[in-house]
Length: 625
Image (tube, rainbow, N blue to C red; front, side, top):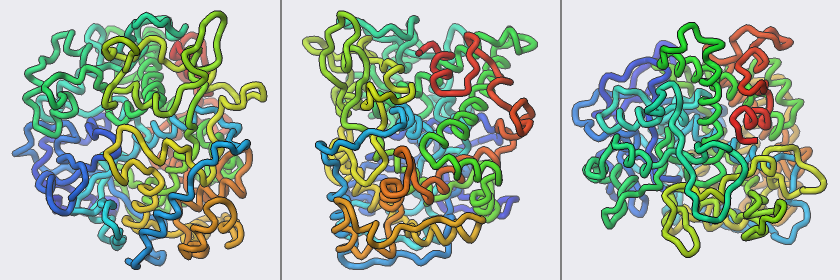
């Protein structure tokens, strides 16, 4: 069980677990690999796996989720702290029927497939960049038996004090690309191998990418080299760096990540810093773009690094450059794309005061693990679920044709994007053939359909507009356990209740108290309109509205150009900008050429001559556009 707490030098509460890690250093680069097999599985204390408190829930011991195979004598680690932006807001208490009212609201949040106004002005890449960001900064783990259990008929809210003491973040909380670069070599012997595999054996300054499978159906033009997929187990096996026997000898919960029930190896399993980045093909392609960007930056090292023959030094330099570009893109490109740009500008100009007040109250941990607001991670940042489309103009084989290429389908379905991953039940299916060992060469995204500005000629090359309606596949998620976890709306609303996320109205009070902003409020009438309006009224949610639903409804009513409304924009911009502002190693604190004398991508590396100050230019630099 996780029992040990320590007061940090910053006045916050750090939470430690027993018998997992040994020798963890304070180096910010030595973070944990995450082997959490999708969102339907919960990381729990080692002794609680299979306990009655988690009846019906797929669980994994947290030590193995972090990639450890021999942890019997490890010391206590410290995980990242969670907290509340509005800790003193009125708490939710157990009420008979409240869970059913939330389920009824979730059932009302289904997209009308005939509705004509589903398109937005936001390119689809921002949906999955948001998911990539989420995986980079948060991965919850229970420290209290049953804390995250939401499968019961009646979900009982946990008091906030218990949530803060019992929930921890397996991620560092910083925008430092933990999900790309993995963890440190102080872990168990298998985890050490895993982290070494992330680096290309022939040049350890580079990250190791995978190759595409030629299945005879053609290929997309880019990339024009062999690095077109994530690294997968099959390639590592062929390299001789690991054997099938080693994978089969892993502890059960880690073994099932790599070995099928019949004893065959899951050759398609991705070897990446966070297994969740291979749960759908779109986020996997975003992850690959960052792998390729790192490698393209390494190719420029001879212009910038004193001794380019020191490949470890080149790796560390490239890692820093990729992080700064990523952080800059999040603050200056991602946030204005999904939030009200006036609010983003105000947050940046003020240095994210809401997050700073939260940071000062909760405190950074002793190992520089950043505190994460639960209102952000459990509710507001889940707005991206609404942006997912049921299908996409994906490439010339699954979308609009190019030249003489005859597409297999008019679009790629959302379900198909979950089949072409290592997490699928039948991964990488190929009609009339055995499953491919890696991504088939006709399945990479063509980024000009996914990342360029939305045009009137191709309005469906956009994210769904942010609203209270989810695409039908999100209410019956593929690759998830049967039952509740297949319904994303029920999952989000129930988890918000269980973890006692303050209502939207209470969050507005907290924002206005901590900043100089005045946040417009939705009226009861505005909340009660639309397809989910009857469920809002029947649930009594007009005065105390679940935060996730409110953020979506607010975008529908007050958002412009398909973006978030005022409260959603504040919560997202304050947290993501705040993580950068409070990180002394971030680009924010580096001198440079922008109008604030701060670092700008023009001051950075320019692979192929591209200044990486937009997502299209990042993709061009990575050789993908």
